[in-house]
Length: 212
Length: 56
Image (cartoon, rainbow over all chains, first blue to last red; front, side):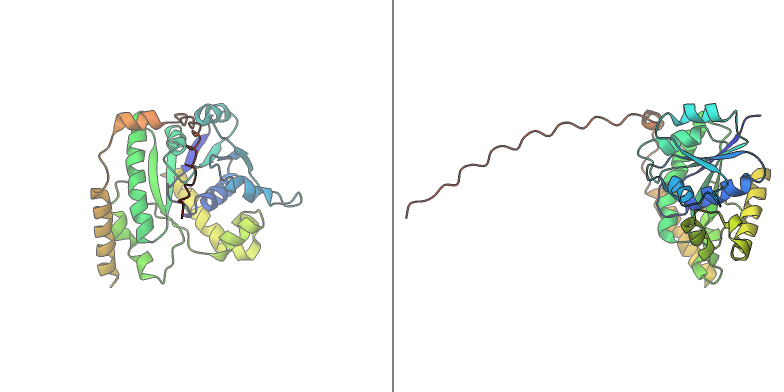
């Protein structure tokens, strides 16, 4: 069976693409063979996994693909159940579009802030263009770093209704454990009691992704 | 307050969408993993004119 390919994309930096990719992949690896494809020249995914130790390795392999992404992914689809592509924060190089053109689903993490919302508008156009060649592509917005006490966070649903792509019901809250897990080269699944709430929301997210 | 803020946010997104350039499908196809053009070698700067010293 061919792998399901999930891209994590947003042309804006700092929206949590790598954090989402790493934890999503860690959760998916509990369900089937998973690989992370680091398509971002900044190499953050590789750097993250590189901080893990031999005693506690990151549960998913990360490979960096600098060129011929489509060809590499079609080759790897045979060997895995899930491929997660961490896209670069730009549309200018065409790499993010290339990743989406071979993906089943693309997730767009957006922070609950006006600037992030505005920046994501352009991405929705790019996704529409990619869909012309890849009609199976499904795109979803994911609210990242949600703060329940913030009025801005609570107001997001109204703004998201303006986008031509649906938002996932699941969201990731702003939690220190996501940042701390990166420092240790781990996912929130390996953070013990500190990671429990984060694991719960990632699990909820994965269930939604796999059934949507 | 949340509702008011939500309206403002929604309105700002509508504005951002309105400011989007027209979609250009052909242009997008071309950008897909198109190799970046090679940087042109910089041409040497023209020599600075010799400083002219005015006689007193």
